Image 1 (cartoon, rainbow, N blue to C red):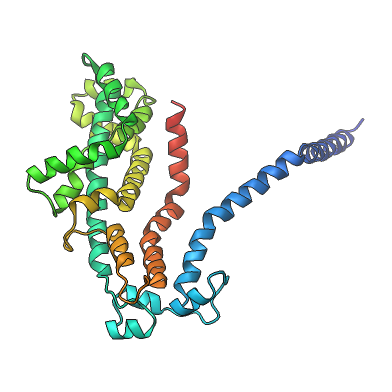
Image 2 (cartoon, rainbow, N blue to C red):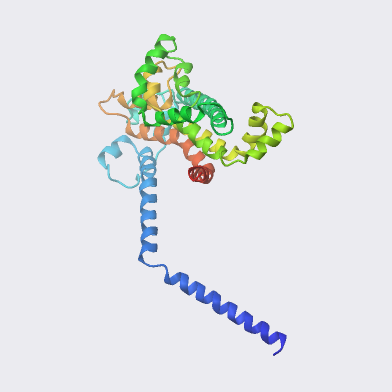
Length: 317
């Protein structure tokens, strides 16, 4: 048998194998496979539908919205609601457009939300990473007991600590200040420590020992060795912390009643309660909610895959 004949025989067998693999894989795609895809599509639709409904409502006038609440898309889309939210209309123009005539200092509240969310993100990520490093890499007496105590705090609902924190902030004279809003979650949370500790445990200790042999102390090892290696979960934690701080409503409502420190979530609630014409300005409220959710949506679009991978990786350690 010649070499070419052997080659042709192998090529033919490989093609048959590929065909059989494809046929076998298609045979395994039974009702369960298509049912899973159908469930995934339904869940995706249920997730996206509220945002599409908000967009549809924000492009309508209040009279059209009240007359046809089930209409899938406005007949004559308009951006008047966005103009009212962004302060581009006078109260008279707002009333003429069917709005409530109430004003919302959108840019001020947006700035306040950015300040609070950014400060909480920076402080909580930094101090939680340092605490996670101490619980995972350093050896000291009572470490596991203290960590178990930290984890037990996960079982305490945040509403239980709201009143003691409020009393403390009031006694410190920090009501209606950025510090009063930021401090309770500025340093660390049990989830943040647990999240980073799980990843730090997967880093070989030989790296720490090699750095210490070269004369590096604990702080230098943390900032120069551990943090660069754990950049992905640290960034993920920073994004999750920013989202939680951005969406927080109860605590800023309790301690941030002044316009100078009022965040966007609280401002939207107050805007909804203002009813000069007997009903809220629903289209402007939908437009403001959609604009407020836009930064979070952009973060998820850019970093969504990294967040899912980091959470999954930390969970199996």
